Every structure is written in C-alpha cells, then in structure tokens.
Image (cartoon, rainbow, N blue to C red; front, side):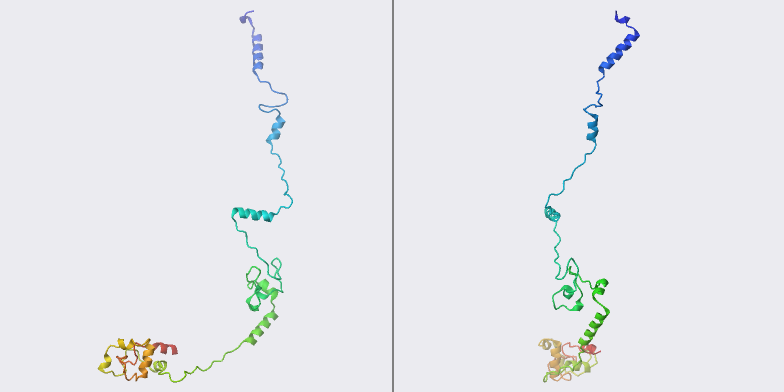
Length: 241
C-alpha cells in the first residue's frame, strides 16, 4: 500500500495517536508538576501553629527588665524607701508631722514619702484637720503673741561733738545760698582743706566744732552757705518727712 492510498479516516486516527504519545502522563492521585502529592502541597501552604514553651522555673521578670535596661544604657528609677510608719505610700498618723525630723513646727504642713507637701490637697488636710484643731492652733498662736513696746532712743555717751543731723533740720536753705559772711581769705580753693577728711559728714562736724557756720577757720565753706566740703543737709530733711 502506498502512502497516497491512506484514507482520510486512517489519517485522522494516526494524528490522534501521535498527539497522545507526545502528551506527558499525569498520575491519577492528583499530583502536579513539582509535587508528589497535592494534599501535601495544601498542607505546606497553610501556616503551622507555633508552640511557645512556658518560661523556665525561677524566671524573674524584674531581673530580666533590669538586665535589658543595663544593656541599653537606661538608668533605672531610684528606689524610694518609705518613711517609718508608712506602707506602700499610706501615711500613718503616728509618723512625725511634715515627714521631717523632730523640731519642725506642726504648721509647716504634711510631706508625703516622695518629699512633696500635700498642704494644698483639700482631701488630705481635711482628713487630719478639724475645726476644733484649727481653733486650738489659733488660741496657741494668740497666747504666744508678744507685743514689743517701743523704747526711747539710746543716748550717746559723753560729748561727741556737734550733731550734724540737728543742724540739718534747723536749716531750710539750699546748698550754695550764702547765709554767712566770708572774708577774701576764705574764698580760696577748699579742695586741699577738704581732702583731709574721709567724708563730708566728718568735715561738717569739724566745721561746726570750730566756730561754724558763722566762722570758717579751716577754709571749708568759702561760699558761706554753712555747709562744709559739699555736705548736703537735704537727705536728713527728707528722712524726717
């Protein structure tokens, strides 16, 4: 039989046979390319539960936290030691007033274990104070109140010379206004004469002691106003007003 004698039916059958031979075979179990079992593939694609083991016996969370802080350079908070008579921040009525050593006055206010006064806390104050205790405190304060009566000014012992304050209050004219006559010799420069005194007050006192203000034997009052070496009586007058 020649190739040209093959009919259409035989040709179609031959083409189907060749196509079947070229197609890769698949397993009936449902496995795909690269997988031996489809069910195993599905199980592998799903997240598997993770079992967390409980901490071993003796684990201390506080110690672990402190170790983490030390490793990271974090300074742990200071440990606050409660005051005597306190427990977990609860203030006892038997502790010293103010949370301070003996000798602190009762009116200084209460201080908590953290060192902060609670005197502005109405609830805390109302818990330890009453109207009766306030009345007793006011009565004690009134009993301790002392009125100091004024006394006479101390007298200066002996004769200490002229009083420049009394002289300033006895005058009313301004510095530079001539009130007393001066000779031509008294009109000389008073700088050298005034340089001998440590202050104008001492110069005025010495000036009054040696005949001033009528006379100027030392040459410290050339303008005749009665005030030596730029001494000014006005501050004393102002203090009296």
